[in-house]
Image (tube, rainbow, N blue to C red):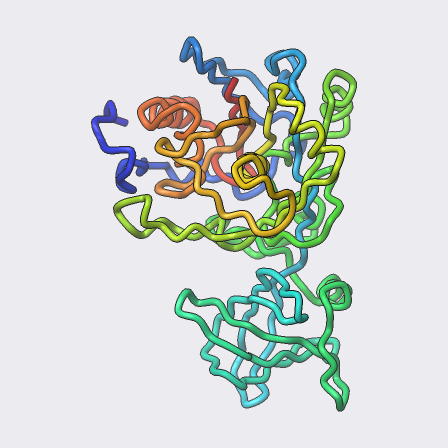
Length: 347
């Protein structure tokens, strides 16, 4: 990469070239064998190590926050009752037992789709961003709407893990474990909080023994992969995702200790809560160099897509120029990128 002389408000400034062979299509057999790039914000020093050694680099006395969301088998395949195959990706539920989804295949309001296990849905509304509103029912006469828990039970039988498109492969049985964190608890995400995927039982036990750990839930939605397709990043319509911060985590947050956020989802949740004083609801904060974090001090994350809101979040911690330098260093050292790739610790 060339030294950055670009505007941090321009999407094109966050572009970089990534050799295809550096996109990790599968996790390592032992996820903690992943490389770890440690970046020191004060000295701008870069250290290359591996995830096994992460405990040695996390500053003493920090509170560590993790996202306990659980990925659902959100991708299902079926057909229109009128004919024609479709693919549906569940995004998130609404309180009236309708659901926001994305559908591959031409549909209109009133289109009825059917799936295995006598599952049906009807399209209620269509939006310009590509999302659709549907409701689901089982094969019965009254078309009683399924709630989220009832639907999850069926998806666990017929659905597929919704792997990101850049992995360029179908999901496999191993992904049912590999694409979940050790502490996944609350169903609702369509993408994993991938910074946590590096933890094995051994490395996580070491973390628990030395630091205070706190959990929150942010159900990662499909919007996390939405490209920034405007040149001025501030014109990007940031997606919203459901979050909840339980009382013990809220209390720790209000104590204003130093915080390490494990992942971009945790960072956005904590920063949204700090800004709005809301601890449950829909979070849509967009962190970037013009809107940097206020309470999160350190970040553990993966390496993200070019021109994405996630690489812009990294730049909100260390600036655009240093972000591009770090990514260039990672590429030169053959780091593995994206969801199943290597990690970066910003201290």
